Image 1 (cartoon, rainbow, N blue to C red):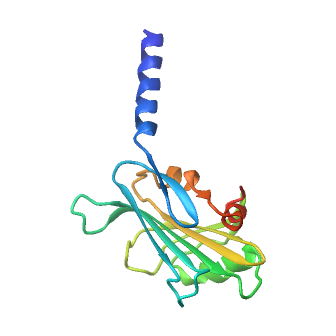
Image 2: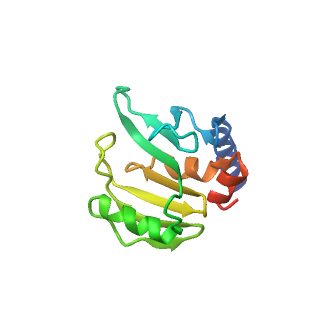
Image 3: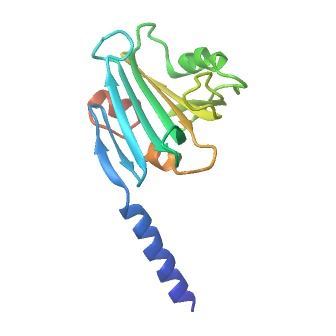
Length: 166
């Protein structure tokens, strides 16, 4: 009976992971489970081709909003700040933000972005090199798989791989 239960769980886990589709964008790829989609906007802030905004989201049932959202930004590091400095500058811009702290390769803090795109608490993850800043805001109040999607991110250029600690 234990072996049957174990085999059933194994098959279910494989079926769930097999449903994720790897999507490639300009700077990153990610494994997106069923229902997740992505949209990329290069040069989103000032037209500078070194700027990237990548939105990975799970649409709600009505398709008029999100159940989970990952907002990723890659920007030039004009101030030459390190990851801690960037995180400490960003935290006051969110409601109820915690104190930024190192967590693996990233500096992270909890808070609620003031944007009304998806009004939900999230975790902001920051990484910086001398040339670029990486900011990811992971919002998943109902645990719909955003952390797994974020963990699947792969940098497709040497710069973005370095920003992800790969």
